[in-house]
Image (cartoon, rainbow, N blue to C red):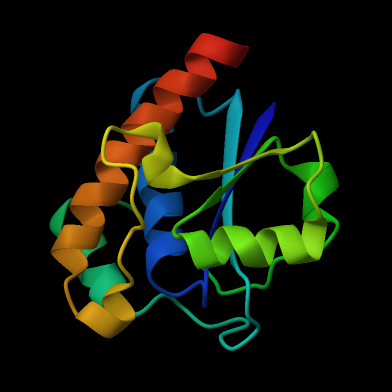
Length: 153
């Protein structure tokens, strides 16, 4: 089983949206028995909280299941459990490294570095633009799925 963890600041906007989107993509590709998906935040502000209403609305718009999404914080043990830890922006990547160091395993990467955009995924908690975030995450998740299939499956 390949384990993927999406990480943002609070785990209520970008990373749960990416988790749901990627899980939907994995299911549509028939890979749900080979790839597991989760999300976490670098902060503990929203432990146990559901995703932001804007995240839930955009997922509903695209008929993507949001069941089971609940805020949690990145912990050191995630380094042992996950093969890929995917940050949404450079600040997330720095905070991931502060907690986990710079291990050879897991792969730690900023999501849009897998695309030709190579930029941060803006936080819709501050921008209010959940559509832009969804569009960027959708592209990044497609590229991540291709990377995993090419390298691991």
